[in-house]
Length: 626
Image (tube, rainbow, N blue to C red; front, side, top):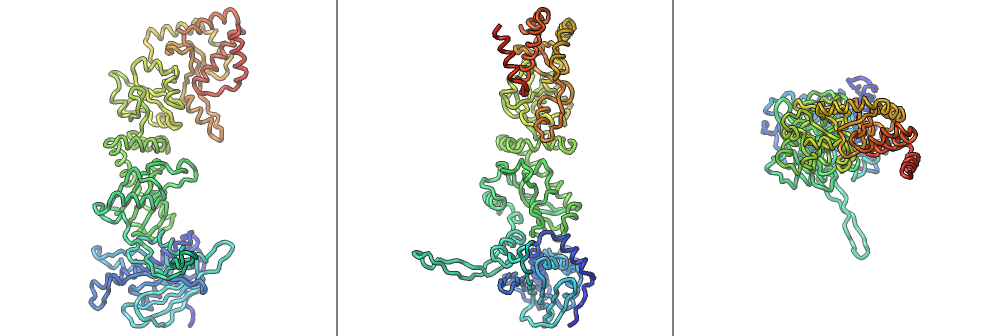
């Protein structure tokens, strides 16, 4: 019989479709199973209105079988089958969808779960096979037909025999080559894994004869193999069940199994949405961060399903980066099963789902913070850095969404608090939110700059994470209150009388301070200060870059070279101040030694490295020995 040509014309189109739309060969099985599920759905639907069609729903099933010797894989269903004309229309035209047309002709109330689109999905099978045979008999006819093709060169349709209605698709699997081992699609374990991964929630049973190893002789450790038909899929996904029918431990077990976690999730967030966009989701907040969470290897994303069929294992577009720790699944009927990754990224439906999910997660976290603070603090200690990252990432466009979720250590309360809680307890007349940065709470508490602020009875937020200052800088203000770093050289906490006194001291010793500044090239200014209480010296900064920010920049691989403009401040009330004045008049060489030692002391307090520790050690010994 002469071959018929595909209406879509050329091998080039078929090759383009296979290579661009489907980069993952494994999903051919998902497509064929989805088509088989459609055929069963159609038959089930028709039996409701056509009394001639007798169907036992328990008998409807999809069967897989493979033959390693002949390199064939079969996908069989006992659904509605196809006539010769339907074979011609559905399989003779690339991207023609019989299921889609069937669904279009149904009323809104009558639509069943038609998930496949015969055409594009069907032809994905050519990725793994060099010949495809489709034996089908329609429920409306006694005769069967055999459709066969070896690719874009064309196809044939010939009369055939088949005892019952339904469709049997036979793939002749390609030979292995250096690039790909096609034989894996003739392996029992591999087929079971693919069904579990992509088609576990198809609502009809997917059956396959599987091998079981039974102990024959315990003493001799002999086994015998037996064959048994297994149902490979779960059929009903947990997120489609009514929440009242699912126990908390069921959700927890699903999470641990699905996402390979040994601990229960901290929070389970089930959701079902209907409206402009309809979907079901089941989200989880882990109780701990994955081992690779803060590495480049970590991939964020939710498992995306269409009608219970996996479209994408990790759809990154469903989660903003600041919620990348969330695990879960989303199932919607508003996305085509055969949608490409490129079209998926541009899908308005997907963007709307992502927006809703982002809002849902945020509300759950806000609720946790208000109603279960201990649980929230546990969460925040694990993933708080990611929320802070979200505040300043993307030019701080999400800062208002996250500002009430971030927490910092309070010097006054000695625990984590929100910025809103800090503002609520501000003293009357206080218009500034004070913060201090350092490697740890203990190190921040010992900073000389902290003394003055604590002495005024102001609370201080301690920033110990590398992202903290960038987060605060992005926020700029909260509820009209500006942020101020206690290490900012421009911090204004002195009375007018103290300011005048300090100004006069610096003017009277301007030449001394200039010589100190000339000796220490790393600082922009040296000055006497009244802000220090017991400490002799400290480093403050002016401008947007603090000392802690400089440390972050210095740690970056590309060595950005961004430096803080540092000011060396000397406690005018400390005895060292008088000593410097005396040395400046009497012993310039000793004066310069003291200058370098004091700067090194300030560096140590600030947690900055000393480039010449041996030289400084020698200077200290010289001074102490006199």
